Length: 190
Image (cartoon, rainbow, N blue to C red):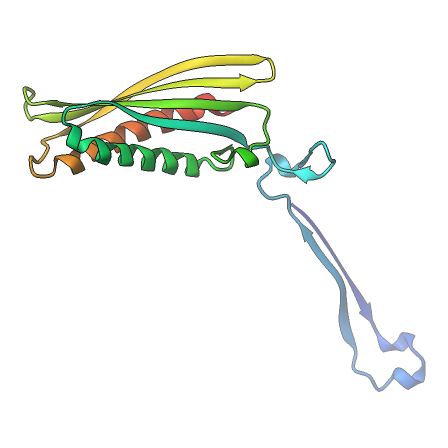
């Protein structure tokens, strides 16, 4: 942080006698504080038009799909839970990634497809709902493209038969958050 402060103390002994009746005061001429917010070590980069800017945002395109589910009537609930959690994880990483193509200023871009498979295991004790996530991604860089696949999952033990949509959505949210936060975002972060 850079801070510059300058003040001038004017005493009236320096003025002719006509000013002797004035009360002495401090006159603060300049107080300036400049901080480079959101940058490493307070340094800013310059873009092509020579304007100061922070680190460029990486554009990420994400498509969500429910690949398989134990009962089709819960497909909407798990799909909405998946979209909501993906959006929340990306919002937490808004300082480096964006879902808005017009804001993506980094030459590196990612295209992700998130597949979800939700199954019900009645044989386990207690019964549970399993949510498995597969993320297939493609990184587009200035030197070409690279692909990667990341998998993970979560489960919900003891689902309530009357609240299966809620329990399946919870298993989905937990699985997506685990995979996106711990594996996908770090893989996309420079």
